[in-house]
Length: 477
Image (cartoon, rainbow, N blue to C red; front, side, top):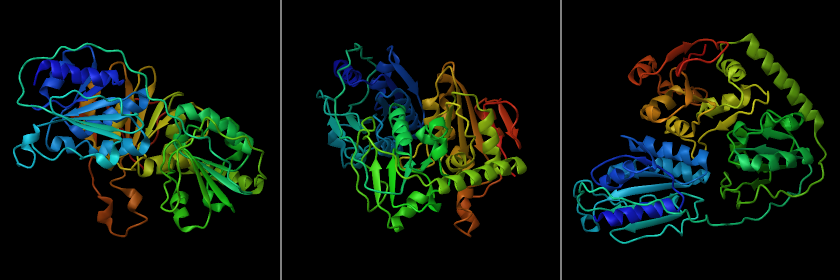
């Protein structure tokens, strides 16, 4: 491959706004990797593609800019599919760059030759297969992931020298303002919101005065303006309409709407309704309609407030139960921290038990496809200097992504703590399935993981008065 061609390819990626590259070096992508490593462009090197892709996802989420993950050819390309799926369902601009052997090898079964073109097609909004020719990323609107498949001959040791071009303006696109639902007794469920949408949504909710179930990723769970409207058990209300704002909710009530004859309206920047029978289209959450207050069901809200007070007392009475530990942990996490919540039980227990004090937490999670893969890698991608960065994940989730710790030496001036709730398996399945093997039971300790990655290790049976340690094993009663 001519070094001028490699330089042009890199410059086009930079031109579309890519500022960071998560690189998995191999023979097929060596010319790309060597050129980027030799430049001033921000790079992270990885030995494992799945973690590299989820890390890039985290970087794109926190920066708001497209981030590229670069792999060699063959099954290495397939490893980044899970992160692509997550990026698709959460609307994150992840650029998948897969090196490939020349087109003449396709269908040959030659080493490291698989059918990479179309590998990500259901989950990307733009894709290109390139061999020697220039390409343009102008057609990528960056609302969803994109796939760039670059064909290389055998690598040489020449290092391409490229310039840093001016970034072209992002594509402008508009979506309509939402329309008010026609209802008398609504319930609002607020899922994940971007920081840019939260203030508009909070003002609307305060005006409308409908009962609200606020999930942690909304960023509004502890908002003082909304506390008097909160309900904690959405299934207990007599409602004639459900308005979902933001991402697809975690609460079981949402899934149960599949079988209930309750009308649902969705206001989200993404096109996914989250229900098989419900249709939705993206709307502008910064252009919410004017509204008059509804007839608020204060009796229901009052009962919910009393129930929540009783639950809070129980956290003090049974301090070593899992939910109680989450409650106590949320009290000692510093204001303004990133709190990354793993899927399965942690995100649900945080919603149920975390303190309601307005501590300005930045709550994050991967709820696009609800998987437990790549959670720690995404967390490390979202870590920022000048704040505490805390991941709260289950034991199986942590075991699924042990490669994530590889990137730690490449993170500068970042304080982090990974708290693993080790309850001996996937306890979310315990109420659902009598077969114990469904829980993947184990007796593993994470102390050896801390030793492997040279991390400060602690084991907690109760919550201390202040945070310390980097890998913390939390053992519930």
